[in-house]
Length: 89
Image (tube, rainbow, N blue to C red):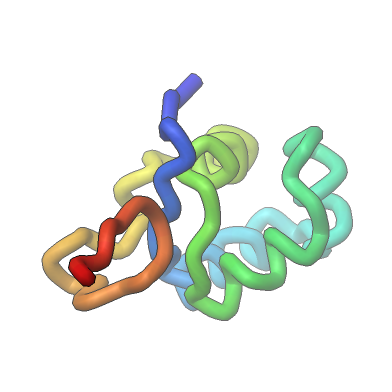
């Protein structure tokens, strides 16, 4: 299992949705099969929103794909205020 240390990652939502539909699964069925990945998290991922890396790893494992197929590379994600950051005062 992937250790994410609370790291949020952006998801290629269109790719995730396409793979899920190709396996003839509803978002509800995918959420249930992944265990602790909630249905709102699956929906957020399919919209391209950020989710915990460990959740993305569970989804990828259930869909039998590599995490990198579903994850937006950091270089493409751009500035993002999710995850760990520290502001200067």
